Figure 1: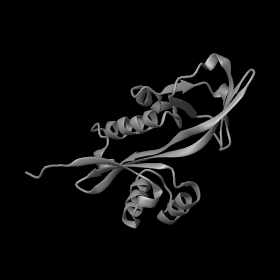
Figure 2 (figure 1 turned 90 degrees about the vertical axis):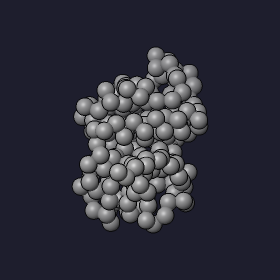
Figure 3 (figure 1 turned 135 degrees about the horizontal axis):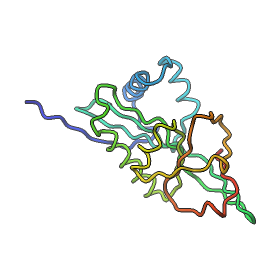
Length: 177
């Protein structure tokens, strides 16, 4: 019987080989309805050198992916405004044949570790039906009234945060740019 070997690797854009990018785009195509060319264009436009890519491998083939994109977080308090880097938790996807087997837990735990080690806030936008999933990994729901997005946020989406603790009662708005 062949042993299954899972491993997770965190890499930057510079170390993503052409093969890895192609595997990522093909994996994303199993979940999103965008062509490989469209995904490549989005990647080239939106992914920065300092973003962190989490790759889950099964026998040296990418079966899971997540990217932590560096963004600026502006927190508006009653009497001050602070600006800091944060991670936008983006694109958690697992190969369709391997879903519901607990493998996304490997990616989530590693992502949370990367966020903690950097001492950043992290923000994600998800469908309402995924809120309880992310809560299992200590993500917290952020009231929509507190968020200002520079990107479009649809009404059926929720915003969740993880990382450094902050007092929501003292915060008027949080803006991600």
